[in-house]
Length: 94
Image 1 (cartoon, rainbow, N blue to C red):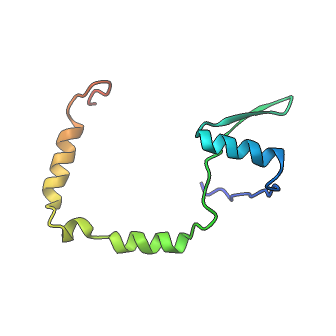
Image 2 (image 1 turned 60 degrees about the vertical axis):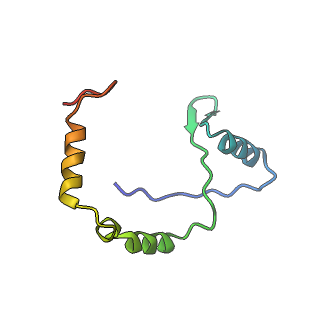
């Protein structure tokens, strides 16, 4: 499901902006009580200068890096599978 992101602008000196800055700094979600419903808001900060095209270029540039580094893909796949089939503390193998 691709949800459209809705953006809302608030002034930097508003109470809402202050609360969001504090929540982002603490890395803890905040609870917003409107009187009839309580909302959980994840206030992680995203840099405004984020450039999705730059990120896509970086992903494309990194394609094949393991092969260029000499990693044996078949051996890596076998190792990952072997690790996933082992029991570990708190997470038994299925």
